[in-house]
Image 1 (cartoon, rainbow, N blue to C red):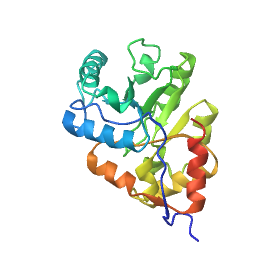
Image 2: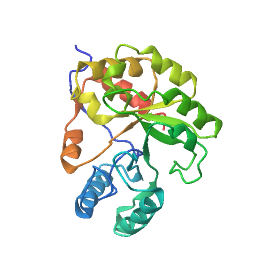
Image 3: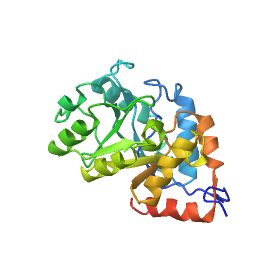
Length: 235
């Protein structure tokens, strides 16, 4: 039986800490109605706690933390109380040049425990990634690298992930990555991190209703499903 032959439906956890459900602020959901529909569907599937993580990349988006807080406060008022949903706001920070200088910035949108979600370009590594991880750790913030399996250029330098982990960086997998959508290089990274028990979270990274349908359609073989359950048990 192949490691990645799909057979079992995925069980979404009760909490999703990486998504783009906050509408109208990045390349995620544009309309509040669509975002609300996605939240409702996820809540019905058992996921009722959401941390919205809009992109924060000064090279593309002109949204500062104050604006994101304002948009968040306005949007969550639209979520019906009877859905039993809890929400919070963080952000997905692109590790751009000199980002490490913001490591101790009190305006950064972090998780409740002080952890912070960071990402790199899909096309090239951030030269200051390790320095950023170090500075965040020194500032008391635990970095979480979003979807490392999508940085395909890392497939031939897997030991870099070990070094990042040794420095305190945690890793978050995207559900869609389990489908092989992003190619063999992505799957090579995913297998390495999964087999070495290096993932701490699996999240939707949801940008659209179409993506949600694809996540609900995922089927995994028993071995991979058990590996996924091991990650989910961590949180």
